[in-house]
Length: 324
Image (cartoon, rainbow, N blue to C red; front, side):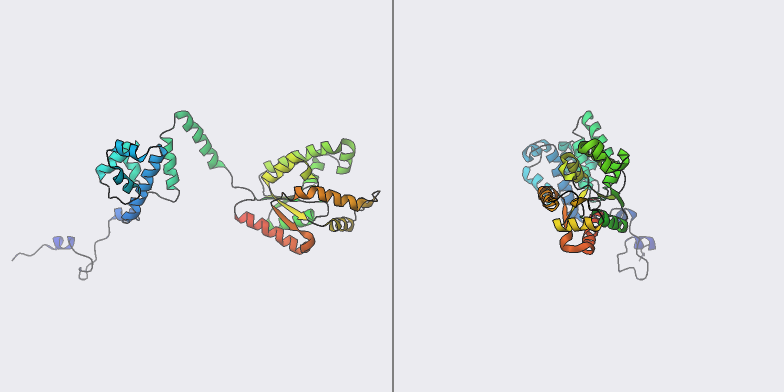
């Protein structure tokens, strides 16, 4: 009786039956296509892709079935990932969708694939001028920088904007800017002289320009603003759109005492009703200050706790990839 050749025997060896011999190595093609043995997932992925392409064409299921020359029931099952579609059926579906067959069968490489496929499907239906506009927008997205961590502290004088802002900026690795100092640098004179010589209108103009320069700069920062910035609608709107705004809230008495403790006695000079006026200003501006993204009540919390609260807001926003 003739014996089988060893070569033929090894070719049909089954796993677990090699009796000491090494099993044949798996084919490279199988390793190159991870997950392709999960036919349920493949069918669902194919169905999602077909449904997205049909929807992008504004094509009803009935119209789709008519063009593809397949039943609506079968195509419904295909889109749900329940049908075992043949190669001939796939060819009809691809033709009905005006897509290359390879587009339906290509394996996604990451979680963004479905969005990429939807964009490609849409691109095939757009005129050249729309494609050029779209390409320009996509190019802009590629070069767009990650959002910067930018924070603005608002409140009346004595709120702690300078001291708290400087301390938190130092610990969080951000630049600290006093907006009024930027205004003084642009005007070439102290604020007192600026108001005396040119008035508030000119100050507001320089304040807006200084803020815009900060917006245009390429750095993360904490900016301490002037107490009246909320009374300049366009400037305050720019601030809220470009920064995470934090209102350092305090009682009128706290504002008063902190300013005096800093050696500034101007609030009471020639102002017999200075405290009444301070209350009035705070009452007028409180609704505007309340438009800030966050509020830290420094009267209730005290300096140390307020500093920790601001730092927590800054670090949380920074972890999320920017401010606001």
